[in-house]
Image (cartoon, helix red, strand yellow):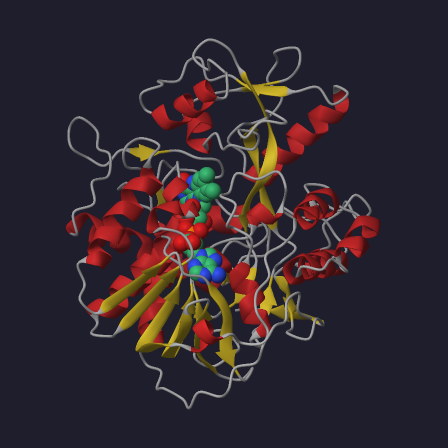
Length: 492
Ligand SMILES: Cc1cc2nc3c(=O)[nH]c(=O)nc-3n(C[C@H](O)[C@H](O)[C@H](O)COP(=O)(O)OP(=O)(O)OC[C@H]3O[C@@H](n4cnc5c(N)ncnc54)[C@H](O)[C@@H]3O)c2cc1C
């Protein structure tokens, strides 16, 4: 079941302290959870593999979804999320997100976050695919993630009861597979009554991705090895408008949906529109793939010439560096892996199947996103469920630490990333998935096995050998058990 195995070396056995809560990950979910726990009086250790400014959260361009307009409502946001999720969302998780979302925004504003405003002072609300109302708030135009994570990192730094260990990786959990007692890093072991994984997504396991390279699903790998269940791994969201610049470092770079929300059309090889650009992402991705087939693989383009480059300065700058003047001509786009709907299976308080182990943010799977995430729900998720998990974690009492085993995390090889793209990309079938199910990287195996077991097409999971949706599988999640077996489960 493991890819790496070596004896615990001396630096790892160094004692890095005992805390109420250890948080693994310094993106929006981890920073927020650490802050909430510390403000509630807990002692917190925050471990982050990268400097705090290098998470996926830092790169978020669009914004954060919440029903804030007087003509909008949490009920409408609920309905849009359920519709995008293709009869697979866990309704209780969607309700928590949509009801608690507006309060989170108020809280962030009270703490000094500057979201963009209209000239008369009201919050500026953007539209993205699948939303029936303008409800996406943003900061610094398309620099929302940078603004939010910088503000949170500053707040965390000001808390005396949070110890931050940057450039430190969690390489294993200390777990007897029933209870988690803390985390092993390459520099020592942290003991904690509760451990909260907030280690981000896994979309960079796919070779063509909008994600930073660290999004390789370390959290689910560590949690599964520690005895926790994973869920919905067959569902990765392929973002329809990633830059197509093969062979360059810019291939896969994200062009935010908010730009389509402001009216940028998608054009085929004849310069004609061919789809509703603001349909949910799985529909737009499918329309692009179909158009590729119809025009012998030739590119489709996004026409941003009528968009204000100041509002989306970071995107226009990125395109300029990649050699495209998007103010003058449409740019080539194609789908890339963007967001992992599946992850460590948790309840609404972030509890995993292992006592003392919690998860929040993109590495977790509450069932919120179903088979297709509604745009900009994920930052809101980091806040709503990050806080819930932090509060629940503080209820744990410490256990007696067992001797750790010698399993340690090994990152995936380039070959794995190529295989995941080739065999579990936007279109999959039994033959390719069977090959992936024996990959050497544990999460690639788990993705291959669950995608193989879901014999239908739904949301981000499109099987060429099972193109129809099977209504018998509505609201049925595939749970990947720690031993590699798969169980079907329905969540309330
Ligand atoms: C380009 C881009 C644009 C996006 N735009 C939006 C948007 O507009 N709106 C929206 O809602 N969502 C957006 N998303 C998705 C959203 O940004 C993420 O889902 C969300 O930020 C995830 O936050 P997180 O805290 O769970 O994880 P991340 O922000 O990915 O943070 C993970 C953290 O875990 C650390 N880590 C990982 N492994 C380890 C380990 N083994 N040990 C220690 N630390 C570890 C990483 O270093 C990092 O600090 C976007 C994503 C991308 C890539």
